[in-house]
Image (tube, rainbow, N blue to C red):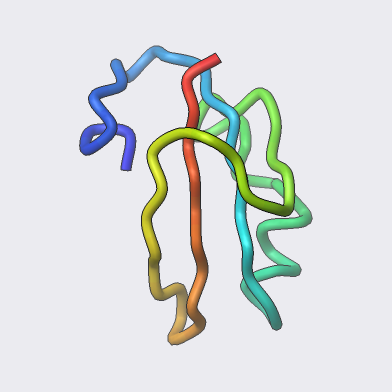
Length: 67
């Protein structure tokens, strides 16, 4: 998603998500934040580059925004 959004590898980002089930639990834990240089992981919609994904068969909507 970073590449599709036109972000540089070193850009810090904010991540917003809408999900349910196990995917929501994983995203809420935000353990991946350092790996993607995320300064925040928040449930809900945000402004930025948005894409619907399938994570382990569960529908997830992710938004990334450069900060």
